[in-house]
Length: 297
Picture (cartoon, one colour):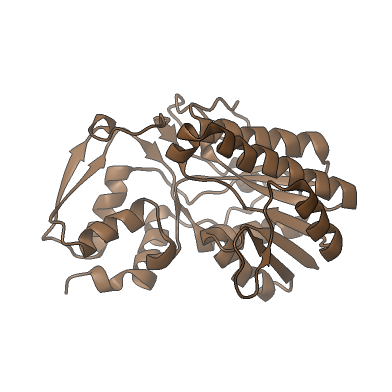
């Protein structure tokens, strides 16, 4: 079975490109930037999408290509919708034309964060920022155009190591590398971590079933940004670092953030397919693999 992956040079795309062959899949890696083993594909260009998909004729497309910089999306609205909404529309149209299944990776950012419990697949989306709205429009295009699809929502992605991690954990370690002795993390935002290698394995297990639909796929348990930062420092034995608890008011950002991005993998639980580990175990694995150099003996 041939699988075409968009955004294959990103964090999830890199891990997924390693997991798929071990499960017996032939992988066609595509991305907007060319590199060895990666075919150029700008999902915003409809003719380019049609040409690549028609030429490769995969059995499944896993659509990862997206603008995930929440603040850039808020400032560059057209860019956000052109990449996340129009790009997904183009990919879904190509899959419709060639009768191909699609797995679209979406986000917990489609919810408004007002719910006290983790969001399930049966909760109604109501995004609070441009990023979430553009990703939700992508979901709508997939549902409208296709009958054989997976929509898989992740939250607070971690992965990529020193070279690719531009998210929260990577920023913490970067501050440690720069010699910082005091860090601050917010306590009023709560979510679910999603470890890219765990996500990739679980996603491959899911698409093999043919049980199409909408799924949440995050590591088990919930945490605040402060909880994550504290766990990182504790695991790395960085007793020399002072961690301060602050509210979101300490960081002025262009895009509003939902109070909660907690996800429950309810559909995976119902199907007895929830292989995602506890977030602490996953974070420990990530730190041991990529950031052990930042620890103190």
